[in-house]
Length: 141
Picture 1: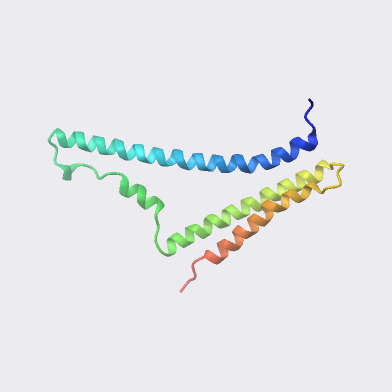
Picture 2: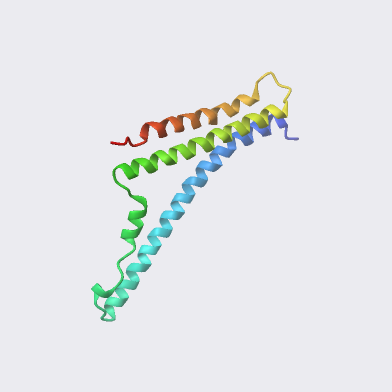
């Protein structure tokens, strides 16, 4: 059974976001597992040093505080970072949608359905992210 291009192109276009979402989730899980392993190793090292008779006050602090300080911000700093990440994500999504739209326009598929309209979905999501970034931006007092 030959694979028809009318099937494979839309299939691949809708498969890309699924792969990206799964990749993001897997990346987050791997990052969290790495952090957990780092903390476990630091705790084991600390316990071994205490068992050898070293004073706990002379040992380096656990990396929990430094890891927490990198991810958790409070107040305006958190809002500014969230706004900035939404803005960057929105711009990337808009241009990704434009790329899909131009690609499908250039393919000139002889079809009644306008395939280029698929590019409008990520463009609209990107616009929503940019609007969210503007709404979340902390106001100067």
